[in-house]
Image (cartoon, rainbow, N blue to C red; front, side, top):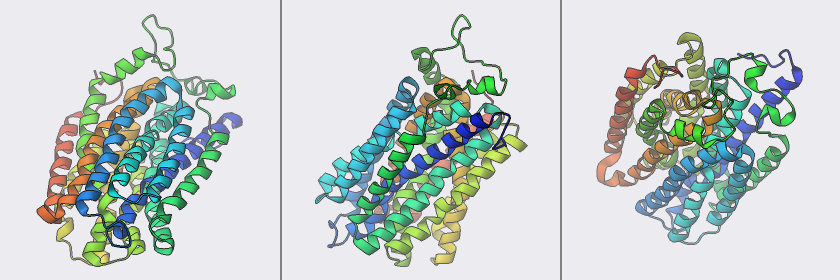
Length: 427
């Protein structure tokens, strides 16, 4: 793991400052992302908007569709225009959309505003991943990205708990307003502390700092211009990037089914209120930091910077657990333990595929595009994860989990032949 104070203290300070502010920025996005999932418990009642499961499924579907499309668009924009502009725009839009949702008075308005929220939320992952790539090189990236990817695992837990507590105290509308105000505070910090590249503050590129060979060059061997269309085209046609996109499409439904319907599932199985349902379902995300750090360490230290072995093992185990989850005794201990273990098995492959492997195979100049494409495909799968549980009255929760398990097993089978894949060997 890189030392906090290396040979150049100014360079190291900037590296960890960027790590910290980009980590906080993505946690902030989750504050406004999780409000609707927790507010569903009150929105179903007469005191809310009397929404049906089918209506809430449509609202989630609009959000996830916009998120999927936006991931690809903003991924390319992150390489073309840099992280800073895209993230500030996305944060401001997310704050506005959250306030609009908290003021909504109908299902139709919720669909419109949550669809916009999905578009703004999709600005976050790919440009921020690129930002980290600009300050950390490949040999350290498994550990660094493992630590960094705790943002969406911990962010989901904090977002659920925060919105749930505020909703119980002040009503469901406040569960949108208060997280939005918090995100606005993070936006101000981001504008003060973030920079796109070491070169922007008068420092050499990360490859020069670590004396690494620069492999990304144009046709005549000259360095490829930042955001060049040639780099974007190469990333979009890289077979390994496309395979990772297909695999992530199969994995993400399971994660998003728990993220968007976990509180309601716990409420129906155990009769808990918003706060307790949000906290217990949040155990799934609380396992995330442990999972992504362990996955990053194992991929770097045990498997020689290969990201696939850890992912394949976890995916096969996750598929088996999904088949068993609803068959566990319906107690807070058993369901909480099941959700925590599911988080352990989900977040390691999720972070390695969508984060570390994405920037490895996209390389520094195409990192945002690769992350955007892979996560965009995953978000198309997340549409199923966000809407499929709305059919639980028809399929039963066991039927829902069985379909999710089938998709995870398919992801494992697709990834297994790439057990030894490394950047430079993907074509």
